Length: 512
Ligand SMILES: Cc1cc2nc3c(=O)[nH]c(=O)nc-3n(C[C@H](O)[C@H](O)[C@H](O)COP(=O)(O)OP(=O)(O)OC[C@H]3O[C@@H](n4cnc5c(N)ncnc54)[C@H](O)[C@@H]3O)c2cc1C
Ligand code: SF4
Image (cartoon, rainbow, N blue to C red; front, side):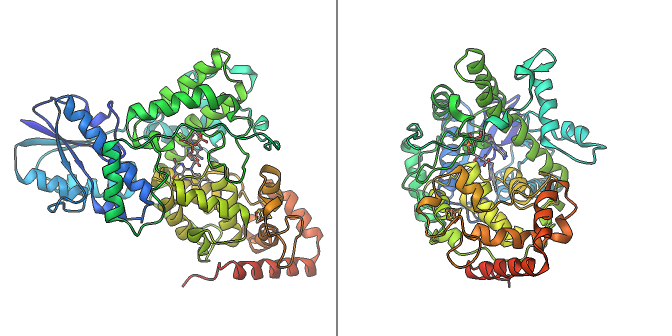
């Protein structure tokens, strides 16, 4: 009897566990574009187009290899709208003796699938997703008994385990982490190299048109769509990055520049998250570039740490703490998300640029996400649910397992210090140091109060004052709190009032 094999939209890897043992011509692969997944958050149009296009391209490739694929398009009149509904529809016809799937990346869908498996009349086997470098069990064992879970120590263990950038038992070059060398500001006159973007192939063009027709009212524009939608296209983007961009990745990793959305970043998160690239292979190839003397250690270590360290670490945290992680709000943040997060209509040059690239490209690089839009939401005290919804809705690489620990944990400190040891709160001075935004901004980055002052400055001390009870004992904040305490009571009250006025001015009003 035949096996029905489920392949989800972010499981587009040849080596997927659900496909192990597949008998072409006997088994059937089920792939379905469903409304539940496209709309449980109102995803950016490019995210939906990318997913549908990559799924369709993958299905065509499987079919060309003789695999029977049951592919359900979003506009199929009989489409039930959900993954479990589509499973029911196939199974109604009979002819299968079991269902095989790979575990879902997101808790919500994993719950649905577990419910389906419980009620199904035939065996449902849910296999581990082996495309990650650290299994759930492995992460649980690492976390067990630790009072604090720090990415740096997890990362070192992963280095030892994979042998990546190791010199025997020691880290290559004698240090585990070269972050201190990766915080350079972009000098005047240095511009990022041109990037390889992928012109949509015929299948992708149809997916883009479908999304414009069916999800035209979602956020974002499809015009500049340039994401790889096949493994071959993803490989071309990676190869270009490794040879041309990687050598300078470390130097400018934290830098920002107006109208420079890509800087020296990899542009590979969409491909990794869809399964078009394999994380271990990406890390090994980056290491090979270093070993061949074509990129320095600070660049390659910094890059590998993002994938082997951060990406695996946040996934581990998500599954260790879900579902309770999804409601964490350590700072009791309660404000609404200002409208300019969607419209981009703000005089804050740094925020306007971050929202513009987000709308046009469904992308902003890490420092824009963390230190511009994330930092501002933190300082304003926006409710984590609203911020989570925004990050899930606006990026082409958004999946809850990676988005949520980054947003709730790293950017908002809503998890109380699981992902990071302190909030990434910063005044305008940080953005001024790391970018060219402030020179052309209507606000004055040197000024601390009043309508003309940089809002990040107006908000910073008020944030610390407002959260004194929750953050005062954090050793990593001892210095700013000492400074704040030195201001005296009257000035502290004035700073709190300044921040409050700024919150209202920017539209971060109490949520209904
Ligand atoms: C608030 C916030 C929300 C985020 N939401 C997402 C998300 O929904 N999906 C997502 O993939 N990443 C998310 N990130 C992490 C990171 O910003 C993106 O992975 C990165 O910007 C993708 O662009 P790139 O491929 O050019 O990355 P590069 O800078 O070139 O980094 C290389 C790769 O490392 C991995 N990586 C880097 N930083 C992180 C990180 N902090 N966590 C996990 N992986 C990382 C990514 O796979 C990335 O492709 C978020 C970060 C923040 C601060
Ligand atoms: S002055 Fe403030 S708001 Fe304007 S660009 Fe600089 S940091 Fe951003």
